Amino acid sequence: MEYAILAAGQGSRLSREGEKASKPMISILGQPMIERLIRLLTDCGAERIHIVTNPAMVDLNNHLADLCANTDLPVSFRPIIADNSFYSLSEAARDIKGKFIAMTVDAIFPTSEFREYIRAVEAMPDGTAVIALTRYVDDESPLYARLSDDEGEVIDYRYGGEPFEGTPIVSAGIYGITDRIMEIAQENQYPASTSDFQRILAVGDKVRVVPFVMSKAFDVDHVSDRLAAEEFLAKVN
Image (cartoon, rainbow, N blue to C red; front, side, top):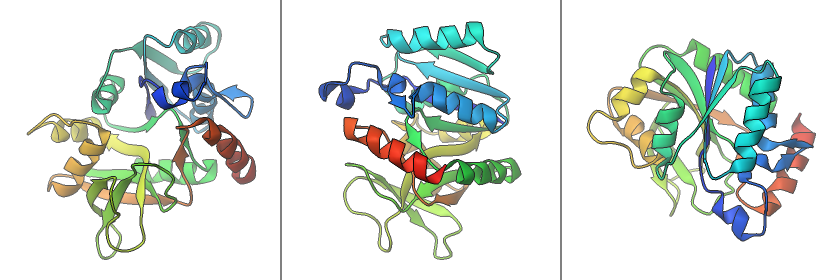
């Protein structure tokens, strides 16, 4: 399995709270977040990990350059200038053919469940995307998902505001997709974000979007999230 990691954002909320390191370089359990994720994916059998970064994050780019030069980790990275998260996704995935898993650099999730998720993506038929969701809602503007009556398909998304009727469930920021699905999403209009990308797939008729529900998944958006992430990972892993 190949992977795409999106690390080209600004990390503005963290910097406003006084964090000096760039977001991907924040330490989680004694490792920079980006390196922890790379090693986790490698342990899960990653064939190749494609990363896009923000060129202004000098500490991140230097760290990745050092990893590439001095380890045999299956990593390549490329600084880009992006103000659209879907553009970051498309740039990270531009050399990938077939199935792959994409995620944000700050995604926190149980490793055991992620291994199950990999198997689900490996088994997905053509024309199907497997998107990770969670009923744990911990975001100022979550991307709510709407499931079909049998909960076997994602049929819509709503960004922020009120959840759909029923138990709230949100995107976990992890996508099992293909290069062809990326093309389908852009056929009529270029997606404005990864949230828009997910909604285009869900409401369209060319891709079946299958949910994979994780018990808990969240992002590190604030300084306080770092401690929460370490406590959670120490408990579940």
